[in-house]
Image 1 (cartoon, one colour):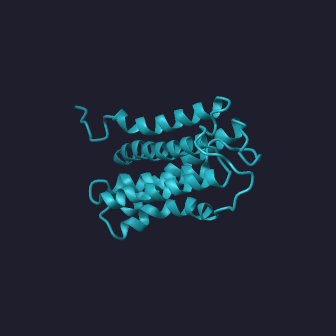
Image 2 (tube, helix red, strand yellow):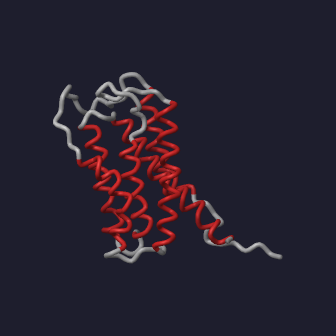
Image 3 (cartoon, rainbow, N blue to C red):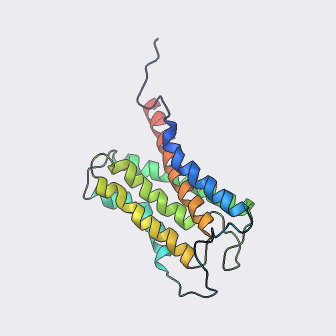
Length: 191
């Protein structure tokens, strides 16, 4: 019986360049003394906290479904739910595994700085919307990145994370989505 190739047979490695770069920059910045903050901003000991990042972190997981209401998505709602669940599982395992094994201190002195979970979740939602809408609606595809970027910036502003933490978090969120798309469809096609 001949083996037939599907559109999921080849794994294009270029989709992993951005997340791998973000994770590498974050890891480098976190591991080198004096590089955590990249010296791009001067920190204040006390800042007025922006709390919206706590809500947007989880709201971004539903961003793709909000975009579904106004755009033409690539995959069905059921596929999107499974992809989101898989991506969040990968994301949570990576973020919490790293946080619990790499003991870095946050700018405010608390533990579990590296990587930023808020940023990872926000970029996960943004990148899933990108994957679903890049062909049909570029505005919807890229819109989530602006919100995710705001979440990352607010984590730095709130003295909860270093720039290296949010760079790695963004990379992990994007990588989680790429891996879920890579894993899910071949399994679905076999079933």
